[in-house]
Length: 204
Ligand SMILES: N[C@@H](CCC(=O)N[C@@H](CS)C(=O)NCC(=O)O)C(=O)O
Image (cartoon, rainbow, N blue to C red; front, side, top):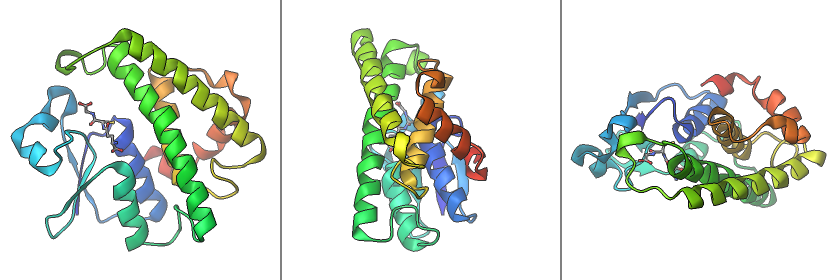
C-alpha cells in the first residue's frame, strides 16, 4: 500500500495519525510536491481527479481519496483499537462530531488559508478575501461549539479518543500555524489540546 501525501499539510496528517493510533506500519509514504503543483499533473489526476492529497493506493491498484474514506478503509481492515465506534450509537456520535469538526474547522480554516492569505502562492487559482474572512468567523463559531462540547467531555465525541479528535487536532494545529486563533480564548479546548498533543500519534 502507498499513501500519496505532502507531509507538512493537515489532511495527510489526519491519515498518518490514524495509522499511528492503529499501529499500522506497512504503508509506504510517497511525497507529492503540492506547492509546485504536482497534484495537478496528468499522472496524479489519474489517481485523484479532485487534485488533492492524501490518496491511498491499494496493492490491487485501487485508489481511495478523502481522509475520512481512507480512515474508514483502515478501520474496517484493522478494527482494533477502534477509532470510529463499536456500537451503532457510538459510531453515529463519532461521525457527527468528525463531520462537524471537518466542516467547521478543517474546511473553514482551509478556506481562510486559500482565500485570505497567500495560500499556495503562485499556484492559487482563485482568491476572494471576503469569503476567506467569512470563513474565519465560521471557524470561530466551530471553536466555540467545540469548547462547549469539551466542558463535560474528555474527548471530542465523548469519553473515548476517536477520529473526531484526530480531525480536530489537525485542524486546530493548522489554525495555530497560520495564526488565526489562540487557545487561551478556549479553555476547554486548551485542556484537551494539551492532553491529545502528548499522544505519540500527534507527531506522526
Ligand atoms: N476533503 C479532502 C481534502 C484534502 C485537501 O484539501 N488536501 C489539501 C492538503 S491539506 C490539498 O491537497 N490541497 C491542494 C490544493 O488546494 O490545491 C480530504 O479529506 O482528504
